[in-house]
Image 1: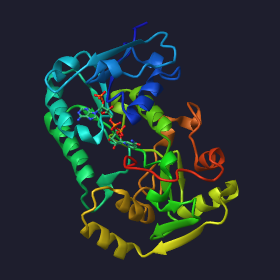
Image 2: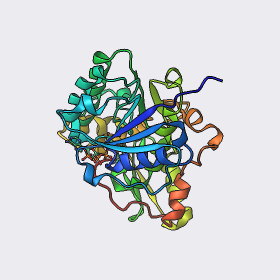
Image 3: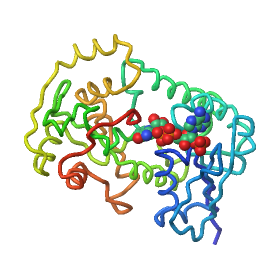
Image 4: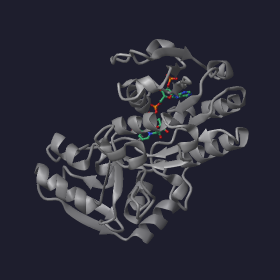
Length: 312
Ligand SMILES: NC(=O)c1ccc[n+]([C@@H]2O[C@H](COP(=O)([O-])OP(=O)(O)OC[C@H]3O[C@@H](n4cnc5c(N)ncnc54)[C@H](OP(=O)(O)O)[C@@H]3O)[C@@H](O)[C@H]2O)c1
């Protein structure tokens, strides 16, 4: 019987907030034996995350890289997951330049949030992501590039999204009945690991997942049932809010997120942007998605009281 060679996967930004969860997923017993080697890339090897899980059957290694040795550092890798943070945009540009000199077949760019390609306005952070994607397409046109969109981060469900549970006040821009997709960072990591196990030709160019998709009204009901007390919902007119905020000079996407929530721009469901949960986790046999109800139960109806940037 012909032996099947398992691919080598590398994770850039493995020390980061999301990168740690992606790394944990690849190293989990569900996925690790699908790869012959898992390489963690960092500019500073000494601070590399030390995984606690067993790595039986898979070689785990670390590589130190910098802007000047990228082509060398990316040798003998078939799948590259980029989880470098937004501060690393220029580094990402150098990484793109190095790609033609590598054997990488599948590339996951650093997306993992809102599908900003579906929107009709510009935002600096999202523009950088678009620019990066366009460069990869231009430089390595035959490489499989898979952009994974996971919506909003479940644990960040709080005032920055207009969901001020602590003060019993939710603000909806547009409809409070439109679904909004939330995914835990653990499940984002699993999503990427699962996609990386597929043959390159079966990996879609664009993937939308959602651990749970709930409307603002639905979330209010779930939090109330879990002990939040009464939550009132204020509704702001979408078009006016959108016009005022797009015209402004906001550097963080939170305000944009508000009206995207209302107009279906973060709805990873069949009726809106589509949903690939079944592709990455058929019948939830690989894991059980963390839901809004799980979060409500865990926090007694009081999820994130405040969040900073990073939930794009
Ligand atoms: N944070 C979230 O909750 C969240 C949620 C949804 C989506 N996302 C998306 O996920 C991706 C990763 O975000 P993150 O918040 O996890 O990133 P992060 O923690 O800020 O950074 C991840 C890693 O990127 C590397 N890095 C940072 N600055 C760099 C630079 N100037 N040059 C080269 N490398 C640099 C660092 O690794 P080394 O120092 O080891 O090289 C760092 O540990 C982004 O696309 C973000 O939009 C994040």
